Length: 337
Image 1: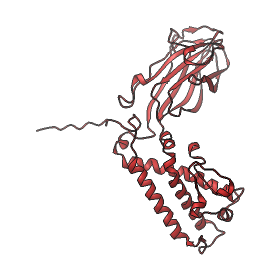
Image 2: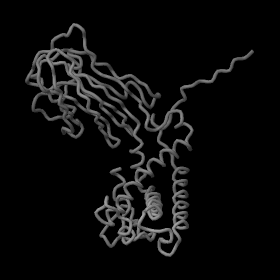
Image 3: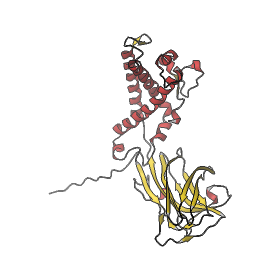
Image 4: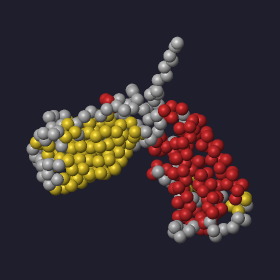
């Protein structure tokens, strides 16, 4: 995970300045050990140890999520990494009403998710029914920043629903989603209907009013911000159709807790290094990690890891959002004789 990069360092001798101030050398993992353990997959001992840190990041995050599920009963009913919304916006009509070309605008769809904390938007496919054959570029704008963040090219066939699979993720770091998916209005297409996204999750944390799609257009050359955008109108989804999911994103929570995960990351890396000493064919069973038998040193690292992870889980107060708290969907009914 990017937010955990540089959380711990290898050694101050390398000039590292980790965010936590912690180094592998603090627990007696040395550069020489990296040199001893490096393989043909590594360019140096430093590269070897850095790869171990990166793998430890993935392991710690996965363990954190599993422990969270086990310790918080409400997460078992709903849970992190859960799909809140799965839908296709933009439904085509059988009679194919014409949407004439208008070179003065870019047009398409606008998405507004008001409370997007711990959420991630994933777009799996984008479709356009154009009146002409050729490639059409759909530009994705972040209207809060006023910048283009992506572009999606659709190979269109005249009069047909042309679709491209994209599998794109748009993360927002806890900010409100205001995204516009727009293509050149000079491309004539067909009017289709958009639907307000439906609520699949819990209320009131996730509701119909929290996530809304609408048809949109913006004057060609205008600044790509919300105030420049025109929404609604009679053209529906402007010929565009998007299949998407809104997922709970545990990575946002992990990033908020990164300072607390520094020690677990340190000890987990130590365990991985100890395991490497046991597994590498170049080193025999008598090798010791400075002055301590490998098994004892590894056991110490495992014990310290368990302690700090337990403390984190026990002390965490989950946010009151749809991703972490939910009214159970199964009701209990007592039938009296």
